[in-house]
Image (cartoon, rainbow, N blue to C red; front, side, top):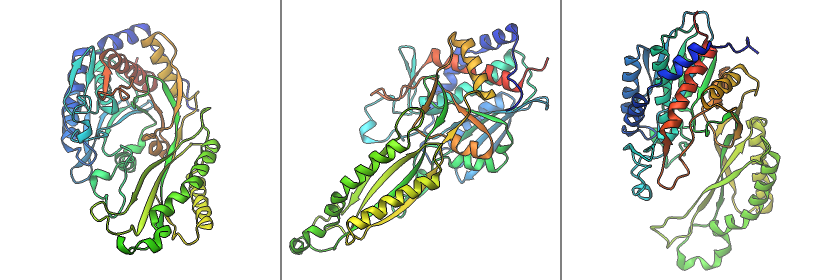
Length: 423
């Protein structure tokens, strides 16, 4: 444990909180939403963020993770004798805005607008609103004339969204998510900071732990023949063979979910995809049928153990159906992450939250993943804390303007507490 969390004078805390400029924050948030940035296409948003870092007087660097996909790292140097804090957020959005089933939902479009005291638009909740809050927090510290002993880093990264390449069909930059940007960040100079706040949408709860994941494929094989000759081998159809295995898979899921309990809640495994045959050629039986599982792994379980459990399932299926040609692969492994509830960073966020909201911050653990998976493995202790999420709304992403303003104030006060104010 590091030194105790510092304290702020009432004058400093009040000056910082009052320096948060709602109009400036709203303009920044809307401008970021208006720049289209699905995974793999983050260059334009990176230049927008970099320009705003430059306006704040930050030492700004673009890290080219791959062509057309730069991270943005903006540094506010301290006096050199304090602890450093990173605010990390991803620039890529969960969707492109071009999906046919989302075109009539305005909150899933990369075009921001205000309605009923909220900002709507693709990425505002996950997580361009947080990046806007980071920038506003530093602007508030500047306007309040606060000098910090430790450095503050704003890192806007590419490729965080939970998606992955899967050969041979789904390859390329648009599928390279799952912390691709933060992996590059921490291995190219970004690993020198002490702590990190991730502004993922947490309903302004302090998230001290989240699950990781293992993505795996299980396949069955069958004869590839014309429909006219398929009757004799009907039972060997790879889709029917997979269907026969589903009860065993479901039993395994139930057992794993019980064994992977974390934070007082059972784990979760999702059957995320099934693929078999060719819709354009139904006159042939499917040679192979694939079942894909998203296995959520608590931070209390190693990835190796989770992979062993998956491989045990495959062995059980092969024993049950030895002639089904069962194959498997694991193609994503991302660890869970947690931080001690009494850690200095947690205490700083709690103190800042209580000062701004007037009530104690609630704690939570969640089943989704974040870049804390990578950052914590590099020794950067990380907490997730962000504005209330509008993700569940049928019209798409949205965040309350008042929530954004208060969250920016929490970030500014957290930086002042962790990095310490120069007296």
